[in-house]
Length: 342
Ligand code: KG4
Ligand code: ZN
Image (cartoon, rainbow, N blue to C red):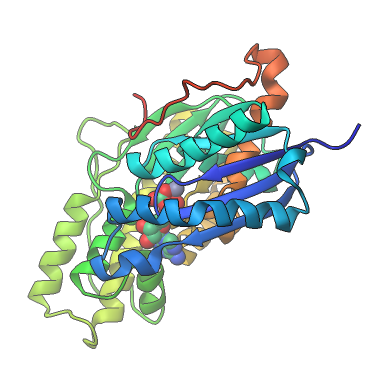
């Protein structure tokens, strides 16, 4: 029997992405078109522009992913698409497009959760991660901590009560007019800086919950920047950004390791766009090794939004179908959801 293929589509925010995966989970193509240039003048994603941009690009990105995989539409056996959470207009472009393809081809369509797909990026490169595992997803839209008792099971332990970690980085970059997206710009400008120059304190939840909060840290950073006249080109900019970046990293890791102490996982995972951050990657690996946890973080390309992670999770679901009793089908009622279900 010829190998089965799956086409995955991701349009939850400002990347138009499509990927083709073979049935052993191998990624045959992974095409991502970023809209950074469209949103850069505004210092953040403009939802209306994002959906219009997806409409313009999606057919070309899907075509390119099929061509790069050496596959035709007729050779696709399953379709997968991000259902949510994300920008509703953006999600609907990918969902409607995928529905149309699956309907035309009479093939199953699987709706995938974007945050769970980010976690799956770690399994794509390391299929043998030991359970139980703790997974932290840090991106522009999400900062959520999950306990995974086993494969495909996700129990929310904590999430941000205000800004996501990436959002805080993006907002500080916008405040200082440094460019968009803020995370990579801050990483670059912070590199020569001294992270101990501006000691930002990291928030602690008074109710001992494992939730995150970044708005206090963001306000403290803005206050400090005003007080010390930190601006683009200022001598203290690198020290300021290194201090802020390292406070964000501390806020994330302190909570992750606090959760690890109570849950006793065998593995720790970090994924999402902010997981590209060098300081976070280095500190995560250093502290995990010191405490004896197996640590996993996807390669940078798989951390930011992409469709390979969506396809990988869809395959994992298909393989688990005989056990879960959820046979993949073409569900034409499939709808998008903007927020994470509680
Ligand atoms: O996962 P992603 O592509 O989209 C969402 O699901 O939100 O993440 C985008 C976020 C942005 O906030 C961006 O500033 C951040 O990831 N980011 C980084 C780095 N690269 C991207 N943050 C810190 N350091 C980086 N190198
Ligand atoms: Zn994402």
